[in-house]
Image 1 (spheres, rainbow, N blue to C red):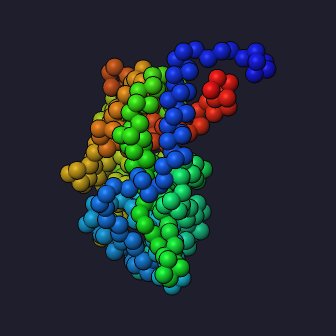
Image 2 (image 1 turned 30 degrees about the horizontal axis):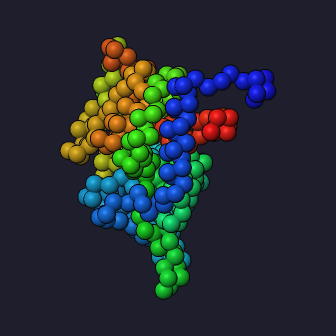
Length: 331
């Protein structure tokens, strides 16, 4: 079928594409710097820091990631995330005799750990803060990164400096807050646009050992595992960031504890879980993002039984790429 013979767009389709195009145009004229709040703090970790100490710093400051800085070469060296700690856990499992050495590993050793367990190397993708926000979004999708550091060049020293880090959540919230007049045009449902994953979902029970859930995340290349009961009703979600307090102080033996015990270690300000149904519209999802700190949505039916998972990557990918080929047909 040629483009001229293809099915004409319905009014709902046109309205949806109008909203998506307006959001994309907005992302192309706003910079990554625009996403930053008026006031924020940035914690950058030197790669010579012990991995064990970096854990305590993250927990004490209620953060789950931090940019890394190579002081020897005076340059940005990637970003420390929960994935790195999961790599450390895998190393601990594969090389239990190396436990004493693990205690002395520094952040610079993360590369060696990745090679030893055959993991993907740490991401070093970054973007200049004055570049269009659209560019940062495309880089995040290409590398599957959930956050991207903003790296500039110091005008005096002519060396790199980390300005801040923006996350997928921060970008989507920026869209939701500043583009409400366009997000209200996204009236198609989750099912209509095929948003999320619905097959072969990995799940666990409250009594499952944390280590088993970590292995599930590694084997399935995912960052969260829904916790369900015997009827497949959603009780909670175990996320990759939940492993951080579990190994605080090098307490790797605590990985034998249950998921339920691990979830009790979450900070008091933890956002919890957010659910939606397959018939919820995308405009309502953006409204939720605008009002709440959402990191993913668990799709459930009327009985709260698990149906699927919508990640922020799914939403960002849809906003940036859906209908791109169709746009010229009617705009």
